[in-house]
Amino acid sequence: MAEAMLKLIDGPDKPALQWALSYPERETVHFKLDSDAIDVRVHRMDEPADGFTFTLHGVVVSGSHKGKPFSAVYSVENRAGSITLGAA
Image 1 (tube, rainbow, N blue to C red):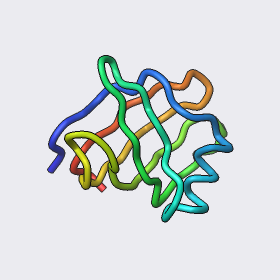
Image 2 (cartoon, one colour):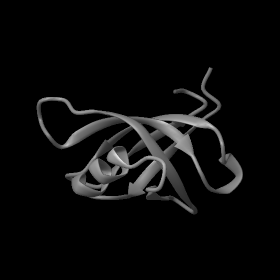
Image 3 (cartoon, rainbow, N blue to C red):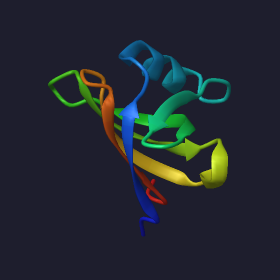
Image 4 (cartoon, rainbow, N blue to C red):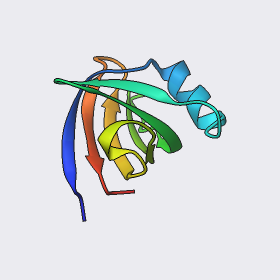
């Protein structure tokens, strides 16, 4: 069951996401939220046909949500999306 949904207002480009996916044990990605920020490790990244919008899955590694699994929908075109905490 999802614990919270947060709005992503800025984040990484596609190469940074791919790098984090390739090296999850050492690389994280940083997303800005409305009034905070969050760092995550990406364990899986699904890329639909458009090449700009991704579904991400992983674990939060910073802040009050540290250790929680997440799923996110994120667009590298407008650097925005949403992250659902507690959903892997």
